[in-house]
Image 1 (spheres, rainbow, N blue to C red):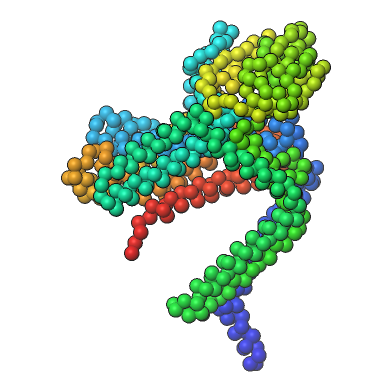
Image 2 (cartoon, rainbow, N blue to C red):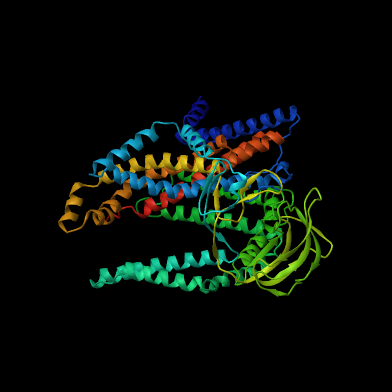
Length: 599
């Protein structure tokens, strides 16, 4: 009888029930997930569409309206284009919506009757109309403009048509990446100088003009950089070249050992830190059941990571990092990454030159005489080859000269005399020795061959497609309206006494808002603004309604072709989760940074 009572008391023990409930819940959850996956796999096999990731390495055979690759060579590359197109809208949209929303929020508090009522009217209209309807409206607005006609062919400062909106733009040159890194470096330096001058002001009480110092140094270095000073950042590419050579010698097993070691180190450090915290006077070395559970969970997670790294999954990841992964046509290894940095951020960056059409209807060219051999130094505009331009029908047969696009040294030539090269096919590589990082270019309307098809020429100015314009303006305006309410509420949350104190010190309305009100209001504004940024990122999926090729539209095209619905949905969920978590992490970082420090 006593043994029975002892057994029953064991099952009524709080410690046992707590552990048992957590283990049962975890096992049950894993079983449900596994059952769902198995059920989905079986159902797909019954429809003769087995669950597979092989389509990521297969050529989809479709084109994309806009993006980095309009003719992707694999499903992976097609998904990549969709991701980048989504991020184009998201990143630029967040900055634009923040600026517009802040402006409208301040306008809503304006004492000017027209400004206040206009901003309020805009808010009520946009807030009460569904976002999808607004996107369709902006699409219809652009489509009301005339189509491109023959008389439109030419160069413009600004052009609007049913094809989109085109305007002048600074086109990126091979040395642009060097210049952007240089720009980032001098911006950080100017910020450090500003803080340094402010510290002197606070410590000594004398006027140090931190703004003039930082702005003066920034623009001084900017001018020096524009005239060649930015090439000092080529040391990054120089070092990356040596790193690429070194990591190229590392075997796949190195990354398996590395990640396993990192997992063990993090697990050990986390567990040790937790155990040390229990040695305080407050804890007195007493461990609760939850404490033991956390320690055991840390150990189990570390063991799972180590086992996973030495399984087929870890081997595949290691092969991917080594650069030996060829199934999905992904040339993304660590050596390739550093080699790419070397090519883009070297003192004389590498540029890959493709054949460009020089005549209407030109589709390919037959090389007659290739003049520039590897090691030859050429200047922009020099003749590097003579060729015969041809079209698809054979009507065009005209001799042309191929000119050097940049000044530099020819590194490698991929064609020879007698070869036929297609338009947009790579012809040679060159190390650029003299080039401005950015060049202003005006939009150009061109006619494709002898057809009636007209378009905005690539590489001339910047053109916004109808789909991009509609989705971008739609999500920016819609998000800005809600941000304006967040800004207004944040400003109103600041005590009125703060404004009165600022005015009593002689501050103007603008200075009061900039120096007193907004710095305090932003602490209230940040969390809800983060939610609006998340909404903007997820609302970009509506681009599918206006034929904008973001990740949802591209994914739908792929699963309609391949039938792999489940893998595409998994990619969607993983991508949007990653973007959302990244935005949340950034917002939380600044939220903690701006938190009032208490004693």
